[in-house]
Image 1 (cartoon, protein in one colour):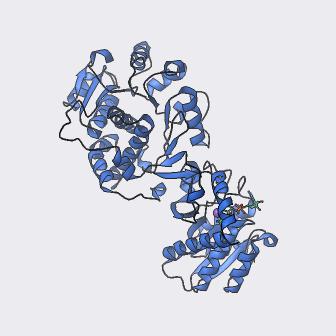
Image 2 (tube, protein in one colour):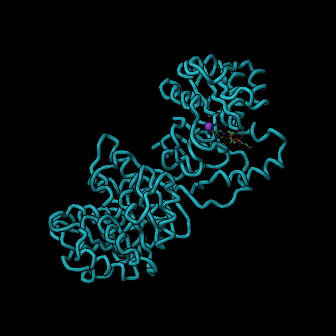
Image 3 (cartoon, helix red, strand yellow):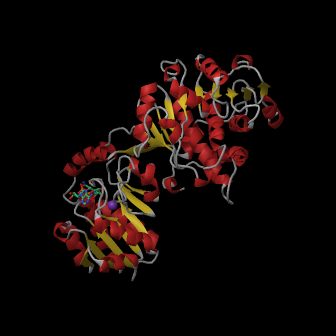
Length: 490
Ligand SMILES: NC(=O)C1=CN([C@@H]2O[C@H](COP(=O)(O)OP(=O)(O)OC[C@H]3O[C@@H](n4cnc5c(N)ncnc54)[C@H](O)[C@@H]3O)[C@@H](O)[C@H]2O)[C@@H](O)CC1
Ligand SMILES: [K+]
């Protein structure tokens, strides 16, 4: 698992480390790591044009020291100072000694220089940044976006909130972010994720001083650990039996997709109960199907309830029946609409409850998710005593105790009808297999994203393609062992 940290956690870890290291040593470590990523990205360094965008803090100092290292290898480095009187003095001296140039950051010539560079390093603001970019900085970020340079953010893209990924106005559009010590939450979630590009982590020795993370990104290896293959002693019941209530006689699709996804994730046994019975039976002869109520379906170890089931009295009564059990229940789509009107149906349940809203469904519970998606999911999870999986470009999972996961996998092609029904089926299967609810939700989102990436390799995908590619996604997740950073750009 990759721990995700806040700026305050970084500050608290930096303090003892700074006290234990010679002055400037930490910044030199950061600059060395930053420069070596830049060398890799540039390929040939000699003669390449490098523009450094330099603010008033240590983030600008990192950029200047890395620029000095690149100038030492023959790059033509120019520092663009946003506040010339307040740039990091040691960094500035090092750059000058290495033969780098310095210009002021206002005016057209600075923007032209940035738009013609081969590499632009963004050292405007790091974790000390507050609020959005000011006018001069925003113009330079726009020039970088319009140019052809490789854009690299130092520690965090300037203009994003390192804790939430929120952007207030304009932020630097990085293709790569070289971050120091730990991955900040804001690099992998919300708008921060798309501004950060591929994330490279440079170790500066913070590890022993860090508090435990409360937010995480799962790797393939983490998900594989929860998906142990069946042993010789397993039978169809011991692998986990999922109950699905989804779809309707008129619209059986949600029932078909949800049941198929559960079967393909963990093919033990899936029991379907509902009015889409004929459609589900025709599509999945492997499922055990009844057109009766959940109680008529037989024993299950988890329930998935909601997609396409409607919001009428019958649907409400089926939802209440499922929630009255002590089993893990995943509540999605129409069942979320019903639940938002009666949230007490889940408060105090003995079994775990996982809610899987998109933004509009989330808002029915009282507040829009806003730009702090991890915070919003945590608040709703704590309020209802549930696990909340908030769907998005980076899906967030929060447990009632505050533990959060930010999903690393996926593709924009997943924004198509029926993909949510597939996610519900996957998570339902993992719940039936006995995974703790938050981990089942996070692992399910990871698998869903991997399946989407496989299905979108050659272009647009349909929800049914996700179901078809699920066994391969499970196989790939099992086969890739090493933790992978940089998935945030996937
Ligand atoms: N503390 C350390 O020893 C290390 C820190 N490192 C770097 O230091 C950074 C943090 O440095 P700082 O605390 O100096 O903070 P920053 O470099 O993030 O910036 C703070 C400065 O920017 C100004 N500022 C804040 N918001 C602004 C805005 N919206 N527009 C214009 N100016 C604004 C502040 O007044 C302050 O002068 C990290 O992100 C990392 O890059 C690394 O060198 C590793 C070691
Ligand atoms: K930056």
